[in-house]
Length: 374
Image (tube, rainbow, N blue to C red):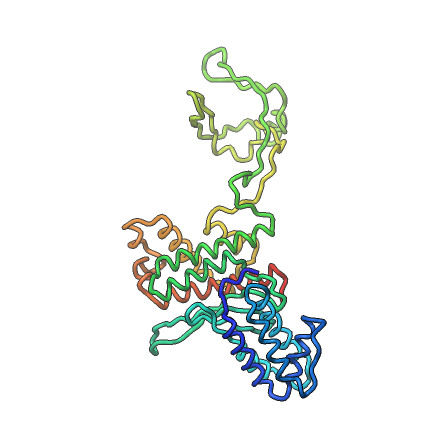
């Protein structure tokens, strides 16, 4: 387990004591949960209750071994015991979850168990709005109750760095990191649907060549193309289907190498079967090109990005912010995004918060779905 947000043994003990105090007469749930993790643990009688609490907390001192894992596994098991109990209502379960908030070694950042037994890191942020300054939090889902990873560590690092930059009023690097995290998540989701983000392959079917000869007509009025093998459709079929009608086309040369050229014919749609082979030698491979491509495929082709996830009108903002900041120049700041300049967005604390918060929420949801967590 790669815990990016370290917890001291003292903070784990503080949380444990808070939970113990919160449960009052129901402390047997703690011991029952511990027994699930350790078959050799014996549920104590009344005379040994405090002694067993001390023994459990002593395990948290060994953070270099599995002390943190015991802590992070124990609390979800306690919560599950409370869920199974007929005496704990939804509001009481919510109150228990609030007691699980544990300070990490990162300033003001807490790790808290949320519904569904999800260990979540909550980043505190401050936003100035019309009604003054608000204290808000941006959540990132780390692990389930069995400590299976939800949002991958590399995405957590990107989001954490984006939020950290935001809290320092560094809005430009904050948005760059947030859009990179969004694109990485879209690539992951689309890769599960057969899309590739690598440089190899082709996004369209590639067809085989057909051998032919070309030479001048005897009266030198043009050139004759003669096939060594008939294409997909014969010239007889063409005359039957279309009559002898001329088709305006556009032809150009394209440099290949060493003074060699390919000839490109355009605007010949509908007539390709009369001049070329229909044999596919390399089937298409669905590919993703950049954040804009990933957003478009996810929203319009696969339907896995909806207005409920991220409003459609935010796509242009994400793409423009990403493109102008990744390929940054002095002119980038005057680029128009929607009805605002990039420089205006970068100076708008609330706008930057909205983008980061919505990206984080979308990423959390996608990785819950990917990992099939409830």
